[in-house]
Image 1 (tube, helix red, strand yellow):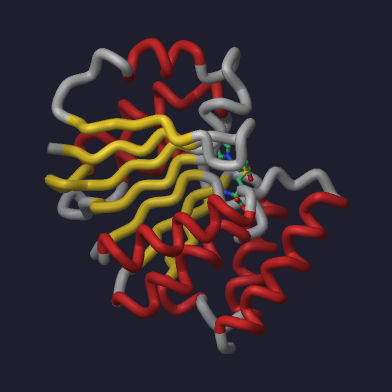
Image 2: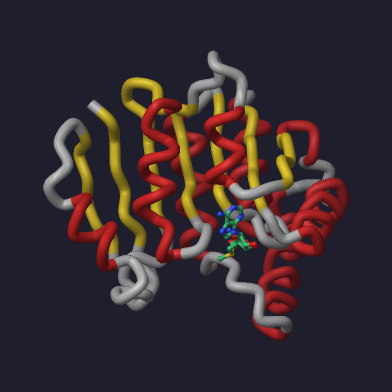
Length: 189
Ligand SMILES: C[S@@+](CC[C@H](N)C(=O)[O-])C[C@H]1O[C@@H](n2cnc3c(N)ncnc32)[C@H](O)[C@@H]1O
């Protein structure tokens, strides 16, 4: 599928998400993730929370072009199945490994040598600090880490937000993408 058709597909998927209360990232965040994957060329990408695969498709289009592998985790069976179907529909499932389960249980049980150089976190906001702790042993040097909705849900992300500001060993910036959405962008030293 060429990019023009893919963008049309993604716009329809986003519309579907709005109508059905699926909290997909915004199109701008999707495009930003896509660009970052193309620039950073990670070997292994980890996504926590794929829902129906909207953000996964944005990353997968880039991952395919730079030979990256995405590992995406979701614990909602209907969402998980829908993501698999949607990625297959746009022929981008080859570069994605779908893992069903709670990320906090799945991540420690991944193969010991599986390290990530790109992580996108979009699971339950109040567990952001737990997700942060869970990924620490999995981060390659220079890994890029992105947390979505850091401005949209200040109460739910407060504990993590307070904690992360004093963490050393990472460059970090809070980007007000789409105004009230906001992503936290970090690069490991
Ligand atoms: C905001 S939605 C993800 C949207 C998706 N990233 C997108 O933009 O299309 C959050 C998803 O994370 C999943 N989720 C939340 N906490 C999780 C956890 N601890 N482990 C696995 N999946 C989780 C939910 O089931 C839900 O599908």
